[in-house]
Image (cartoon, rainbow, N blue to C red; front, side, top):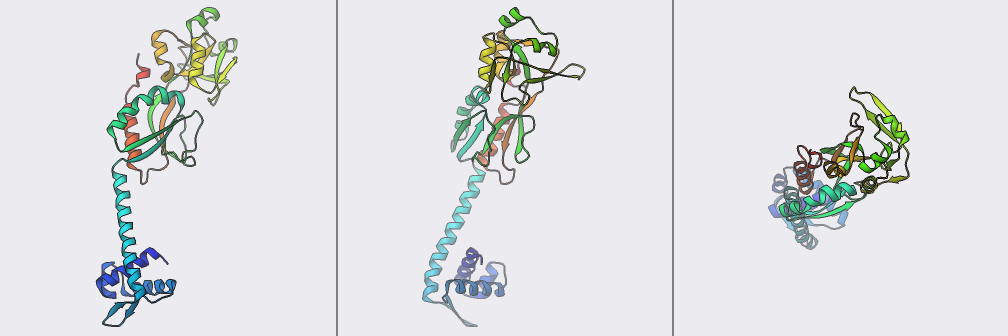
Length: 302
């Protein structure tokens, strides 16, 4: 038995004064109303209504249940109204996950503007470089740098992460500039432990031909800022996204290696569990981020 529906039927019959009018108010049949009343009385083990063809009256138990049922239904209506309103107006805590380097460099400067724009939203930002399970770990949204997104999540592309091989001028002055991806085997490389092909770098030439080379080095890191610091110090050639080293390239602190070859681009995605019944706070955050990164991102400007 649907007890909430049974309470609704009971309250409707009592307030309308008859089975027929109570059924009409709920857009159902008198027979259906009678069934619900009989099931409710059977469940409670007591008579609620004294019924005759022309008269309807509450028993003592029925009077007590009527007032309480009416209060319960009012509470349910209020809860539904609040839920509907919160789905329309952004409010409440929004838990967001992002990679450390991207989160510090490019998301953190955005949060003051977002909070000013949406004063009823509280941000709970978690920065980690591992791939989190959004649903299992209770996140509303994740910003992820990924080639494929996730089959179980909705993905919206925010920007593209361009990746290049780079090194400090000091390193290149000491070891020379590689001319072909195969030359990297003779160089010290800084390995990104989070990359799918950490020790095998895949380049494409201008004709679209692939060149895979195995690299070696003394430093392996699962964080881009660590790899950047090593590259700036002249400790080797690194594979880095331009969102981390864009300023270094513009300032000449790092130099692009193998400019005639390209590494695979990776999407920067906003991921969330479902497009159905999307909460207002998640919707406005996704739109906010898409607007912030539209066009050519700042890190890729010349």
